[in-house]
Length: 122
Image (cartoon, rainbow, N blue to C red):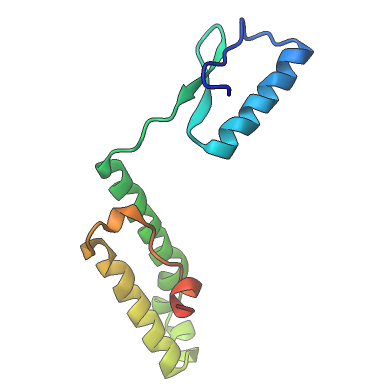
């Protein structure tokens, strides 16, 4: 529908602004195209698929953020750790191991690791 859309200039009239909004919504729905500033005008541009290396980096960053967000604040704090039940401690140890071993799975970069809540409820 808007695959070859572009503006004549960057100075948009009210009608062009409405069309720009529709194009932006269309891009957000399919996530296959985005609006790019081409210098003198705006245009829809097909998104480039990330490489395997880029996907691996993204998933590692997510995994690392889960370690920092869910695990480290608890296991590195002796007072919080001591307040946990043995079952909770075991859950944290196992979740931490799950995250650390995540990148050893086959095709691990094709999906994100589970959050702590997701992992506990599986």
